[in-house]
Length: 137
Image (cartoon, rainbow, N blue to C red; front, side, top):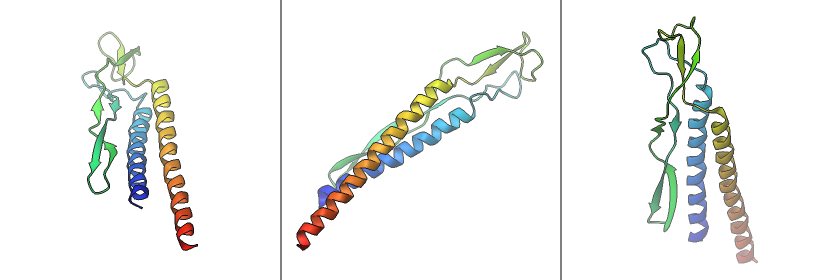
């Protein structure tokens, strides 16, 4: 019985972590084209989710949780837009260091990992139900 509960708790931690990861990715995608308000401001900087292993002594298993969200230190992109309020003296506007293709791939990976953890929960529940049926019989 403890193995079933351990499996459920570990998978649930994965569901929670991937859900938080998807929120960070969605924030990146939402801000991909947002420029700074002035030439002296930095635009939105891409956030990178990290994970931490969490040992659960009671269940004897290791789960996962979202760790600190790091800032991607790669360079901002710039576009020539001389009429923009955030344009520098040369007419270039800095835009976030968010690559929509990378974010889309990260989102797809997070969704698949979420689904895998959800499948663990479903299968564990089914096995637990069958075990209870066997014990009743």
